[in-house]
Picture: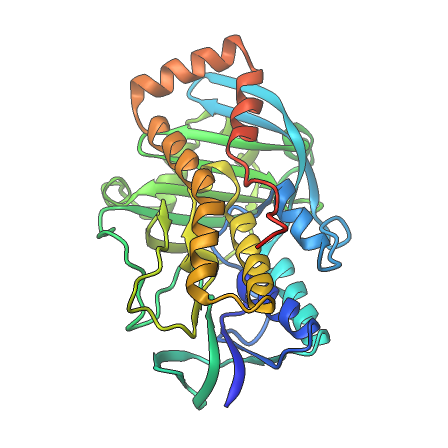
Length: 367
């Protein structure tokens, strides 16, 4: 029997493994991919995310994170820009996740790649490589639910779809984009564009599933329709897509916060998107994942129960998730969107205020 098994080697899984292994615990990480890989993600490392990485000895700047200190919002012919109240970074998930997995391995965790988890039966983890038994199981499978342990979310079949593509931008487009994250708001969705490398940018889109289903041509049709937005057209006009096809994920349960149930197994801990999933519009998704790992490691070290950890995380991240969802819903209402953009055009500092309003709180040092 292995003391701790972490299911998933993404932000939350690799981080909690590194923290617990560094503290002397026996940890095994089961990661289904065999090497570095991209994931659907806005790849915006907020100030909180960078801070939590630093507590593990990882510097986002040294990993290649591109500075982001401005936000620019485009909606049809209107463009509004403001300086962010913090310095963020743009960094590829393939780079960041690999750095975290290597850190976990150096810290003493047993990182096993190419292992697919099919289910959990009590304390037994069923995988493509056989069964593992554990005293504690850290469920960090991201947006993918594990059979038999799905999140208690309302039906999302008509919810959101996430799409991601990296682009090689022209020199003039890079200069125009600069140290900004650009948000392009359109009917029933939005897109975020930011640099994640010297010449590369990430375009991540969130759109209602029913809206996407009605777009002729799928991804190509969606991009073609968005090229009518001045902000995006200026950036992607001469850009080269870097993936053979976009990455995609459906049925995103935005607004989800896990609430521990009385019959929940005491040995099961939910981290990352399995514990809380905030609206990507605010750019704090990676921060929530990293923070959940930090809190879980601290709670485990102090002997707290998994239920106590889940309750603490729900309280800690709940305000951010609720505020983010409120902002996302307002952006989907035409009248509210027009009024909000008019106010931001008259007072650009409102954009910075909104960015600061939707951050995670300071780390609770007493847990």
